[in-house]
Amino acid sequence: MDIIPNFVVFEGADGSGTSTQLELLEGFFHSHQNNEGPRLYCTAEPTNSPIGSLIRRSLRGETQLDAKTLAYLFAADRNEHLFTPNGIIERCARGELVVCDRYVLSSLVYQGLTCGEELPANLNAAFPLPSLLLYFDIDSELAAKRMEERPLKDIYEALEFQTKVRERYQALLPRFAAAGVRVERIDASASVTEVMATVRQLLTTPLA
Ligand code: TYD
Image 1 (cartoon, rainbow, N blue to C red):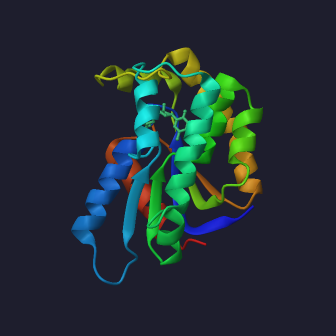
Image 2: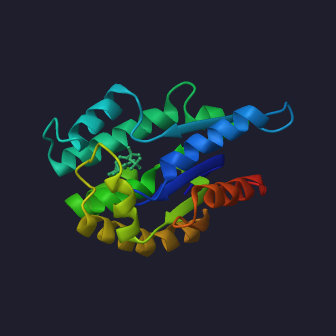
Image 3: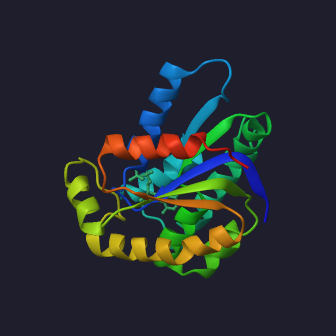
């Protein structure tokens, strides 16, 4: 399986703080960037494309879609994200550091739970992998507490489901490591500042 140099992915259950950390990282880079380091590009899946918007509407319960349809849509959204002009592949190839909130592993975990392992495994089999995967690990009850403070809930946020999500992450991570991805577990129950320090430190170690 191909590994994309300069491509970093954040993964973790809902409430693990990946989106917050991505925002902080972007802010930090923009205020500290000099001309020597690589250019940082922060992005996320589902994306802001029309496919990504349809996915988000479905996650909010505004459009009813079959679980398998959602698996196809996540894969279609990812394909665009990778291969479109100025997409992940092009940016990494020209030396940008691309950091993406969620990627293939999210589909294997979430769609694996909602529509069985086979379809997401097949749909995602050919996608290249990141060189570094940061897994934000958090106790499911603590994550649920954090999410109580948020206004919008999506269809995946129930505690029982999130407990399974965490189990699936833990079961699947070794496969990514075996495929050549550098996998780092981050204790996401630590404070936002502590987690940010860990993320920054991991990103400054040389990437493949
Ligand atoms: P997101 O908006 O990033 O939520 P959060 O900020 O809580 O991480 O992700 C929305 C949801 O999409 C999240 O519950 C995980 C889910 N998801 C999948 O089910 N499959 C996928 O392939 C991806 C990328 C996300």
